[in-house]
Amino acid sequence: MKIIYTLIVLIIGCLLAIQGSINTQLTTFLKHPLQGALVNFVVGSICLIGLNLLFRTQTPDWGTLKTAPWHLFVGGVLGAIFVSSVIFFIPKIGVTTVLAASIGGQLIASSIIDHFGFFGLTAQPISPGRIAGILLLMAGVFLIQR
View (cartoon, helix red, strand yellow):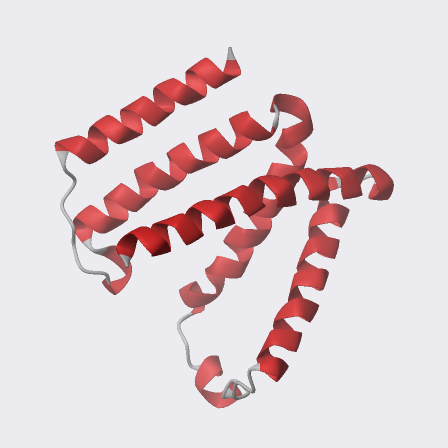
């Protein structure tokens, strides 16, 4: 089952390359990367509202939500930073370099998160294989950019 999940995530990764490229094109019409990111999030929000209606999920309990620690809302900010920066950097360094470098950063941060078990996750120690994989990907980023 793990391989099926991995293949699904691989396909979703392909969609990120398409998303970044489309958002970059949208920005040429709107004249600013932040406008492209805004439209991206508005369309995404409409999509998520539709999916919640389709799957008949419950409305969030706003009373409970108000008591959640502030840092749990940082994900939205990080998503906005990621989408905006992808739109900004794709025309400057290309889709491949942007995504390879962002994946490298994700692997570095995720290895640290896994190793220490941050955010309540089960700790998974960094292995020599993980370190080698990250170093190879970073070498790949260098080669892609040349």
